[in-house]
Image (cartoon, rainbow, N blue to C red; front, side, top):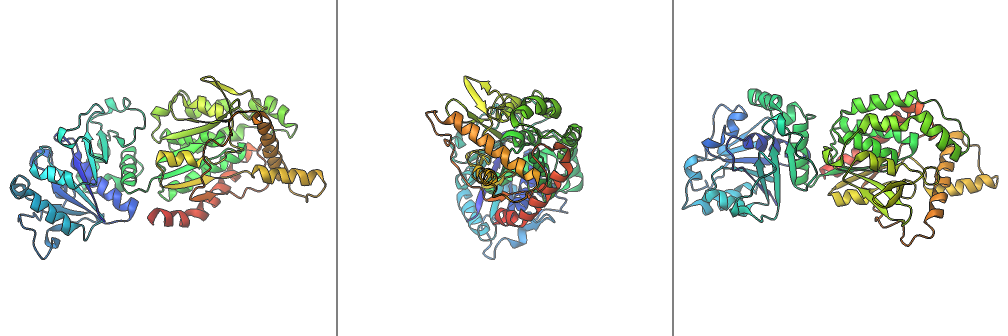
Amino acid sequence: MAKILTIYSSEAKIGKTTLTVNLGVSLIHETQKTVILVDLSSADDGGPAWSMLKFPGAKLLQDREIPSEGLHDYIQRHSSQLAILSVDSRIIHEEITSKAFVTSLFEQLRRHFDYILVDISTHLNRIAYEVIDESDVFIMVVSSPDYEQPIGIIGHHNTRVVVNMPDESGTGRLTGHQAGLYLAPFDAGAVENFRRSGIPFVIQAPYRPLSQVIGRLARDIGEKRFGIALTGGVALGLSQLGILEVLERNRIAIDMLTGVSFGALLGAAYATGLELRQIKQRVIDWAQSCRPLPAFGLRRLFQQAFCKEAKLQQLCDLLLHDVYFEELLIPVNVVAIDIRTGEHVVFREGKVLDAIEASMRIPQLFVPFKHAERHLIDSSVIYPTPVYPLKNMGANVTVAVVVTPSPAESQRYVLQKSLGKSDADQQATKENYALVAATFDSLMERLTDTPDSPDNLKRVSPDIFIRPNIKGISWREFHKVHELIDFGIAAAEAVIPELEKLKWG
């Protein structure tokens, strides 16, 4: 069944038709479905869609009675695969036959298209209300978050709001991740290139923030929102840089992120809008400056060597200094555990570095992080893949990264080793198993007397796991960052066909 999307603005010449054209093209890319834009706007709204796309002229639908042979002669098709149907202004302003016209029009279009975008006039007339009544999704384009919804459409069950910033001065004022609210940042260059060439900016510049916002809106409407859960693993977590690189290369945009420990740090940095190549370079420079940490006792290692030699706080400040959740371009949830109650705590507001620090406090090796009467520690050992928060955030397709063995596997390995039954594994593998086993044991000892189970967050499996096959590298060997990134790249490339199958249905 085709979806009807109505796009409206009470403000003239705000860029509504420009956004509508680009949303239509983005829907085609993100859903692989057919899309038509029906232009019911008036001359006061700005340039028509056919003109923006550089058609030599419009094939105006001028008959109030829809032709029995169909609308094919009136539909124009752009090279982007977006179809355009322009309606004569006399029909737009007709009061008597509006309902019959709209009913007949949608009946015809539903047979041939999956999405019908209707660009209606700034002046709400009879035909506009008829279209709104038929709409599955109502999209308002405004110039400020302090908008008022017209009385005639208050209460529409499925509304989105796009704040199309008129200039750079207001870009930093709107924060937060309210459901259904999208900030389209001011980008005069992208818009001007579109108007000059007729090629939508989502095609010309897909990685510009403006294009990415339109893409997220398209995936929201198409129910193709993609979420990824990033994990810890200390140095092994560096492999996730390679995973993010592969997703970007395959134009699989991330709509929401969850993370624990080191994965939360990388995910939050990515969500700031900083280019991945810059994040990679900063992390690589930091990791290569870390001297290989000595393999002595875990407690001594973390308390003396890890903090001092790894300069972890320096990396955190470099990537996320004074950043707040409300300022992130991609919604992020960070997960930790309250050591006194056993409850998982999900950070989604406030200062990002506070959440990161809480999520990195490995039990008994670090003092718990105190936050709002809670004593918080790293949850990655017993909850390494926070998928449930992704589902709560609205993700339709979910991926989770795993870089360490499970506690059960680690405990079995340690037991076999103590009984002399283990084979000659590499030293790095032994250290990785030992870290998980020791951390899990110490955590469960602390949680034994808590009133609540540490499983208050539901354990939900993702659609796809990404498991880098890391060999010969210990959790403490940050300096092997390039090898770890390569392991992540290989693992992500292996699941791309499955991920694309899920994405396209």
